[in-house]
Structure formats: C-alpha cells, structure tokens
Image (cartoon, rainbow, N blue to C red; front, side, top):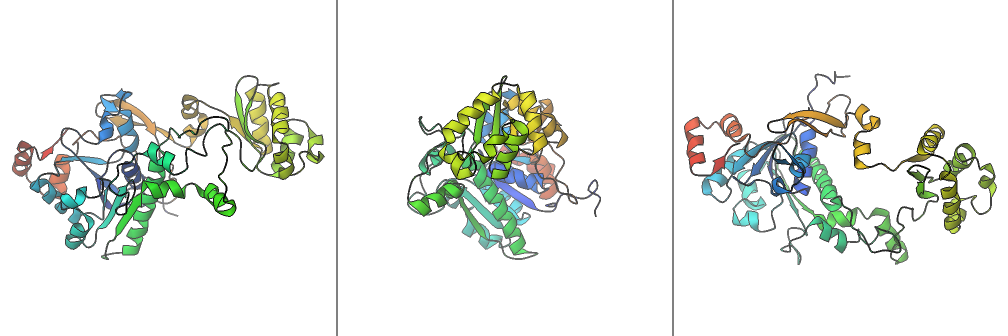
Length: 406
C-alpha cells in the first residue's frame, strides 16, 4: 500500500479551465479540486464570480457563499469580451484537459469559445456545458435558477407538511446534484479519452438533474400513475420514521425494517409486547396504524431527555439521533474526528474555519485544503509560469484592463 502521507492526490496532473460561477459549475470544479486537479478559475476583472457579492455574512471582506464553493482553486481575472482575452483562453485551453462553462446557451458561441470552435483548435479538450434547460430545445434560451427548477420538476411538490404548501429545499439541490453529475461525467470522459485521445462535449442541464434525483418518487409515479403525497418528517413507506419530542429536544428515528422495530421495542423503549402486536407486527401493519404508533412513541420519548435515548439507540443499532442546529452539527465531535471541519489561512480573513472534503482515499489522499482565492490572486502566476509571459507583457495587459490581479 502506498504511503498516503506522501502520495499525490488522484487527479494530480489534470488541469481544468473553469469558466463557471454561482453554484452548479463551481461545485463541480470543487470536487475535482479536492481530488487534486488544478483549477484555473476565470473571472471578470473588477467583479468576479457573482457570489462574491452574496453577503452578508462575510469575513475579511470575502463572501461566505464564494468561499464555500471555491476552495483549492486559482483565480485569474480575464476579460473575455476582448480579443486578447479570448486568445489567452485558447492558450490556456491548449495546456488544459477540461473546459467547463455555465453561461446561457449562445453566449460562448458569440464569443467564439463554443464547443465546435474549441474542438477544432483543441481536439483533446473535454468541454462541459452546464445550463438550466440544456444546450438546445424549446427551453434552451430561458434563464433558470435552482428554486425555479425545484418548483417546475416536482421537488417542491414532495417536500413539506402534508397539510401545508409545497416547500423548496433551502439547499440548492438541483445545482449541487447537477454539479456532482458534471464531475462524474468529466472523470468518465477523461478515462474514455485516455492519453492523447479526443475530447468530447458534455451537456448537463439543471432540469435533467432535478428529474434524476426524484428517484423512487419518479418510479412510484410510473408504476401507479399517481402523484406521491407529502409526508413531512415521516416516510412514505417505512414506519416508524420521524421526529419525536424528547424531554429536552427532538429525536429523529428511522426504523426502516422489522428487525430494527423489534430492537426499538425490546432494547430502547421497553415495549417488547409490541413486537407481536397485530397492529405493529410487520411494516404494512405499522403503516396502516401509523398515526396511533407515532402518538404512542411520542408519549414515550417525551418522558426522558435526549442523553438517555440517543445512547440507547446507538448501542442497540437503532437508527436515531438528535435534531441538531447547524452550529451543533458543525461543532460535533463526530465531524471533528473525520476532519470535516478544518482551519486554513486566508489572505484577508486570517485563520478561516471551513468544511473539509468528504473524499477519503487510502492510497491517494485528497488535496490539502486551501482557502478560496481573492479575485485575480493567481493572474500573474498563471500568465507567467504556465503561459511564459514576461512582466512587460503582463503589465501591458493589465494597463488595457484585459487582466487584473489581487
């Protein structure tokens, strides 16, 4: 086995030209960056990624939103509207493996940086486009953002209290999942290309991502022709699943199998007689008597505090845990021991606490965390070290407003 302490991250040597902003594209390149790819993020001089202005909160003048999705990247501030700026994109593309962009369809064609133009000059390049509704079709020109996609493609309809209105998730689900689909697609294309092979175009749509994550809800509709109903904190099929009020807080319980329900009755709540009770014996029985069972459980859990129930659940293999605030979750010992909260130096924010990476590889560990860059922080470095430009040439570009640095 390789010494993980000295091994390079798995995507070392892969270079990605990142022309994305907001969430879906940056979240895709964040995955690749965590795994060791070099990400060169192209941003508009003087403005940058739109999320640099998504504040408060902020720290050191930098938006929390931008910092969340752009760690381990290099920022180059470059004006794509200029011929010289586009020429630099071509120079960078010649030395990159992947180009990813999430402009509205048509924008890159107007700039002369669309897939056909790039493929003609850089046949090795894997070109990934992320858009709201795809690169062609009746919806292609329509703007779209995650909350609208959640509304249009069923995600809101299945979320919320059964007696209330549909609710969108505050997490940008379609953005995040489409970003994951994009990173998976890019890695698949890298493998397919091999060494010295031909690149290809990847067309990712938030609409498709929203539909894909409907999963079993979609299949349930295809099987029955009926809309799924909202179940709030409970589960449409498994019972008992839901949030219960303990004496000093909320406990979330998920007994998805008959065996877990038996453990719950015998080892956690001291109700062994429920195991053979005809109302609760099998999951269909419990589903038919859901309201009664949930009421009885809520009365039992209300008798004692969380520090009684949670250890009993964990000791007996019953899936149950406290309903935590964001702060309690992020300060939990469980995340700390998995290195999911780390401290990194930041040029203006000082010692910055941020999320770690979920990628845990035994032989080729993820990249060492680095803070999200300042706007244009790496402009000079990339132009000089990667493209071989001298100080006079860089100063000339800076004087014309084609590039800027931090």
